[in-house]
Image 1: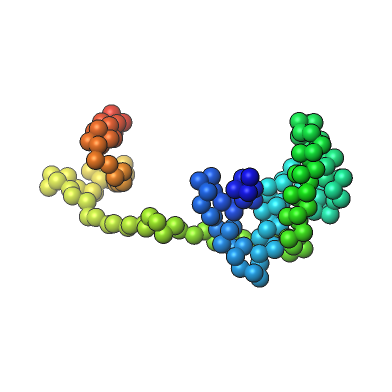
Image 2: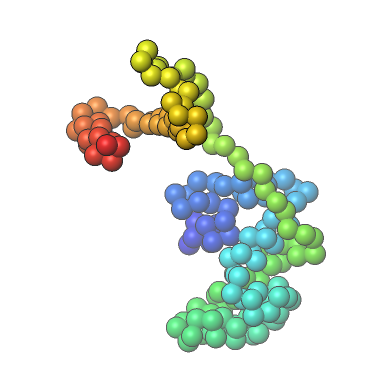
Length: 165
């Protein structure tokens, strides 16, 4: 239940790993604003109905949630949903502007940059044969998955052969 809430607030990705918003939240100087941004996104439909949804009473929130869910939930569930919303709102600061996160490159898979000189047969050159028509050179790089199963590589290269002819 808590994991689902953290995903809805965009603190975790679909796999359950923390995203940049979570790291921004760790900074005490901006945590309340970061939480407010997450609440606005998670409860976007509620804020679409009332831009100041964070100022509504519990009964008003229950009424709005009942409308949004089209009567799908019982009053007990709606009360719990409203209580969760009110608890989150009490920890957030909606008076400041939205915090823009800087993307973080995960350390688990470093980006490798390789620059290779293309091998050109002696009878060909990169210069266009006809100066009136420009030529194009394609450089395709493929990152192969780590696998001991040769069928994986065979399938990849068979697909490349079919699509690059």
